[in-house]
Image (cartoon, rainbow, N blue to C red):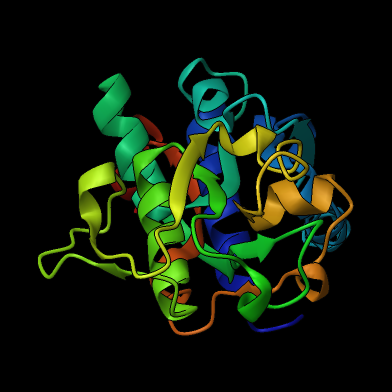
Length: 240
């Protein structure tokens, strides 16, 4: 078994036990429902196959970009989810008064700057409109990407969250247009470029190769996590 799979299978095994309450149920019928988005489907189909070899049953629940898998987690529709980074998770908890917690890490899924009009940063004109995700964590992440691209700079005390007041210097007078992250690909025809989350871009048929620029230096803090309800995490540790 690949080394990186082993810790995940331990987490899934313990979660099965926590959810089922007895070993017999684990062996005969318990299943971990994993909420994902389409961009993670291939990875989790592979994980499902490998987990079956370890006696772990996984049911994949694939959500569109229009529905937040955290909400499904809170409502008990899934046992865990895997689609987000910690900053997004913390924002969700704060906005909904929820207790969703990370229980493991997965991959880094970079944001990219995409355009249907321009092929290079140098072609983006002064005063251009650039769409960014309107949730605070990814808005902030988008500003860091645009700073990495040399289009603007953020304020000195930047806290990672987006907002109209988070731009310090904007020499090209770029107009930031906040949009629902799921709609970022759809507005590409109306703006000079869109900053699009990796998962959303894949659903729209775009890859990182299509991006004018994508995260490199700024991507590391946004490693994606596997998340569960805090009550399940508590069960997990109480069973040790």
